[in-house]
Image 1: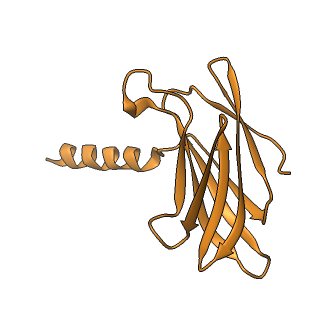
Image 2: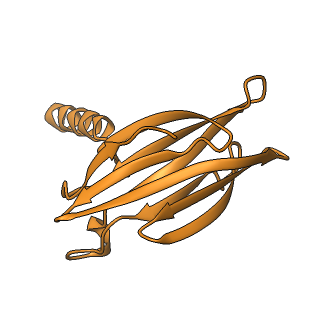
Length: 136
């Protein structure tokens, strides 16, 4: 019985230490400040861009483009709709191994008119390399 509890504790610690994402980065952006990320994968190079254009009623309007597809999202820091997800490659074997990024709106600093956003790369098979280009 004692060995069972030791096994449970070690298992719980290993699960807690494993993060779902492989890479993360935080950005503090002013209005219309563009984030450019070069996505390198399987012999391809594509660019993910995103920026915010409006903050009103605690909602942040975010424009993004990836692989010639554009999108617009209204994100709320204290609501379920606080992020958007972008699939980077098609699945190889199952939907579980699809690499993607999640961009999360964390908070808005009204004094400085800046938004804090976090980017998370989920890539279980290490198929993606991110290169953070300068913000313009």
